[in-house]
Length: 125
Image 1: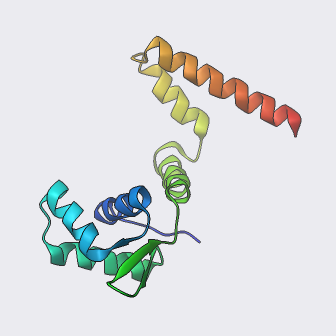
Image 2: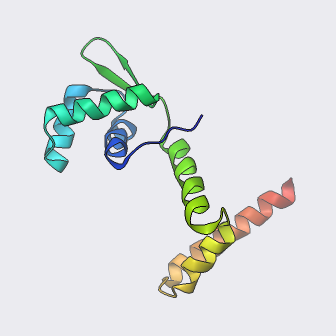
């Protein structure tokens, strides 16, 4: 099931992913401190997340529980990004990233490690 979350909804989800279950009041306080949002804004966004199936509300105290993980949303958003900008082609994305030539040596080494790991995993299949 794909859940499309807007940028503001994702900010709310980040609190739940970082903190675990939390009250709407607590989430609102975090959003006020971090972004200057008022309580109504946060509650409206939470209700949208509930309607979309990303958050479950339970009592007491308007407790909120994330129904989707950060990793699930990252995979969905990555697939959407690849489709939108790179015709669903990972190699086109990496070609663009590597073509910028502003990667540090440690970043290049990390990419090489990831590629080696993927090659080992595919050989095991």
